[in-house]
Image (cartoon, rainbow, N blue to C red; front, side, top):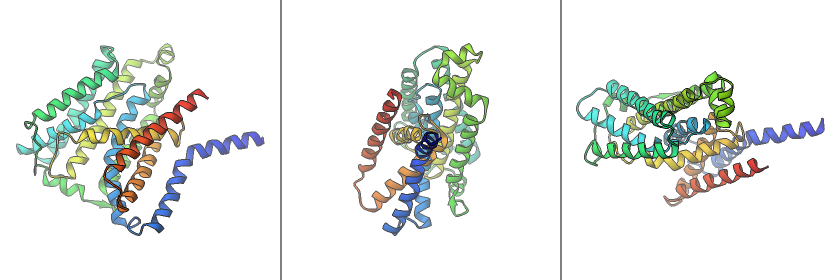
Length: 316
């Protein structure tokens, strides 16, 4: 009984360790850094981490099923430039949002088609489609950004606050809850995780694994489409290189999610906790005057550290 209780305590610590650290650090930062705890700064942290968290949630879906979608960063840039193109020729806010979301689903279906149907490894197929998307991003405006094109309605919506928190934070939470319900409380989610462990076993159980893998690419791209809408609403300008800057931070959050809530498995609550944790750290070091390159270094260290921990666990 004592051994069982010790094992349970150890598992609880592994599941909730990052959450506890996040709360402790938040308290320490609130006392040590006066600018940290005010509501305006909390909104700044949230707005800055929302695109990273949404990118991480999107990349998590294919990873959970055993695929790696490299194109997601390039997809953000392409969707932003496509939305900018539509807005520049006079499309209203609703039309721009619909075009972005429909295009994201089409791009996800294309990734799924060439990966699942034509049996090309996802790292190669999505790298190729990512380069195509990047070329499309440059071609939509001759390699230049679109300036002053975001519809006023989108800009107005992006400034709405609910319970004193910016609406994009609530959009991110809603997307996270939806993704969590799909992964943890639906047959599709169970199949996604099972295929990630062993596709052959799931296929022998009678599950149509190709359809599940195909759908995982579409879900991921739909989340990227929503991320692009949020990003476009925050600025009058859109740039073709925007998406790539979220690749490393997003993957760092995705892999860090395997250390919290459900250790050893990609999970949505872990993504949200990881995004909050890293957002707090980056915000404080920025307030304290850390150089601009510190965030990239920390993301790289986090990514390397998590991979090392995962390898040790797998060996054990």
